[in-house]
Length: 205
Image (cartoon, rainbow, N blue to C red; front, side, top):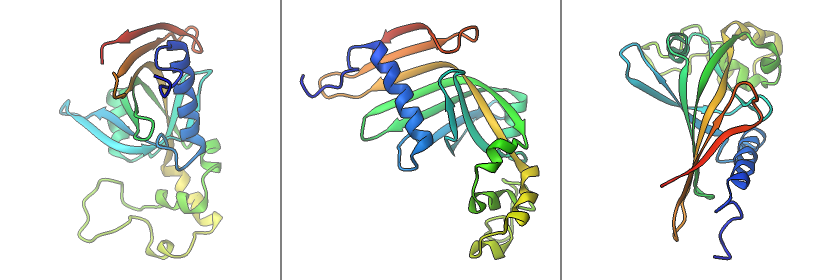
């Protein structure tokens, strides 16, 4: 039992661990929470999933931020139905998070754009929208930028294709895998008091 983490039987410590992991996911590229799976619903009411990068997390406002090309299919899906699910998993810590929330699209979000380096900005210089068919293999952006870094003035053209997706967290379902017995809990949030867990319960794993 001595090797069990402090949060094993404590909901309040689980909350702190969740927030710690999400902040680490934003700050550290090597964190297992740096990437996550975003699930949306398409026009045929079928689930669509893809891996995205965690760009921001606000404990105060219970918001998660990710970047996207405004022309991407997921934007069309979110405009039709803004209910989303997110999946995080840390293989080393054996912790899984399933987050349910509501998405809001912020077009040409300059504050987020300014934080991107030139290499990242080139992804938004594609002439053809993401997801379109191509006769040849392609990165989408001009071939000259495959080797040479675009100049800042060249990258500025990409901001028109850039957007920030903000996801308000309604619910977090937490799972910890342990050989002596797994632990599972669920946390619900209120929009009236974003920083407070309005409800927290244990669930049978």
